[in-house]
Amino acid sequence: MVNLEAIRIIVGIVGNVISFFLFTSPFTTFLKIIKQKSVGEFKADPYVATLLNCAMWSFYGMPFVHPDSVLVVTINGCGFVIELIYIAIFLTYSSNAKRRILIALLVEVIFFAVVVFVTLHFLHTTKGRSMIIGILCIVFNIIMYASPLTIMKMVIKTKSVKYMPFTLSLANFCNGIVWLIYALIKFDPYILVPNGLGSISGLVQLILYATYYKTTNWDEEDEKPKSEVQLSDV
Image 1 (cartoon, rainbow, N blue to C red):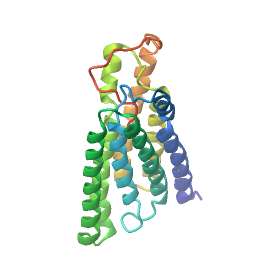
Image 2: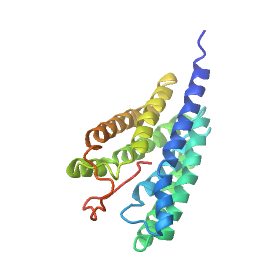
Image 3: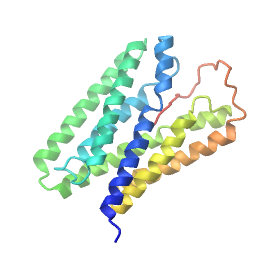
Image 4: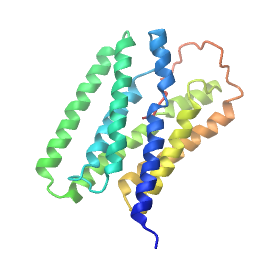
């Protein structure tokens, strides 16, 4: 007899591994930033957004919110720490965006604190807590997966994938697929919905990469793009 819980755990572990790769995929970009001592045209926005996303999912996976979700907590806890490191690098080497980043972080701290307070003091069942936090997580995860839309538009316009790393797009797609399976084994609509959309987002990125790879000039120093350059949706 098939042990679905064991399969779910295995899939969740695979999801943790792929998600960890997804979180660390911009590593080379940050090495470049440190080497050049400048963030250049790269933006902190997706990393700041993902920080809150990881905090929300970590809270969602707590036993007093949504039981049996340890693997959701482990990967999002790791992601939270990684995003903090990325943001610290941005703050170190950014010359004109420090104030905006710090304000955004303050807003996120206040928002998260309010969510935790309301959840623990006014919602007294795990079902109610799961629903409210789950809906919020869906919203933030959709925003996370939708954030590459700007860079996708730029890729189509310039016929260049220079600012859309292949490893990130591939990890996006695989991450969405694995967590989609995880959500189906023990039905969890709050994980199912955003990762279903994430799979589609990752697939579109891979198609764009295959379409415009040959027309990309990797050596050319691009002018400052009019649209916002984003390297990560995490």
